[in-house]
Amino acid sequence: MVIKFNIRDKIPVIFRNKYFLTIIIFVVWVFLLDSNNLIARYKDMRELHKLKIDREYYIKRIKEDRLKLHELKTDNHNLEKFAREQYHMKKPDEDLYIILTPSEDRKITRKNK
Image 1 (cartoon, rainbow, N blue to C red):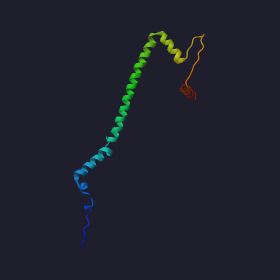
Image 2: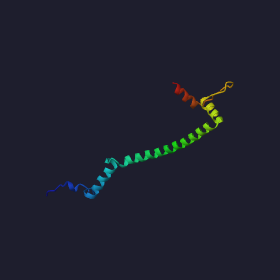
Image 3: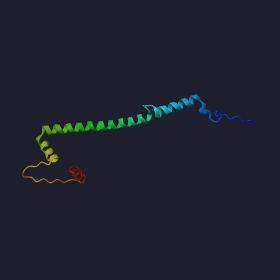
Image 4: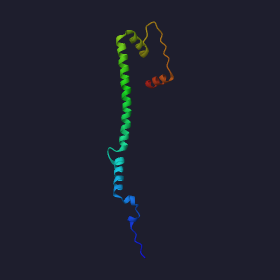
């Protein structure tokens, strides 16, 4: 009695189905091989979301800066206050004391090095 060995009998039936193989090849192509694969699309969507958040932040900052600029251009009192706070300007008969937090002190130290 001779037992005939056929390799086709070792492969499960589902892997012999041409529709199943086509679907598997398509899924692998879409997930990994295509230039617009799902992994790249996910990364692009995440970056797009981050850019939208950044855009909102910058739009808000632009509005705030425009308001500050308008205030500085229209009122001399605000201009003097800004110069005193930002550039440590003082009148000739005044003494100026600058109190820094530790984080501000580190920033200034790093800039000077």
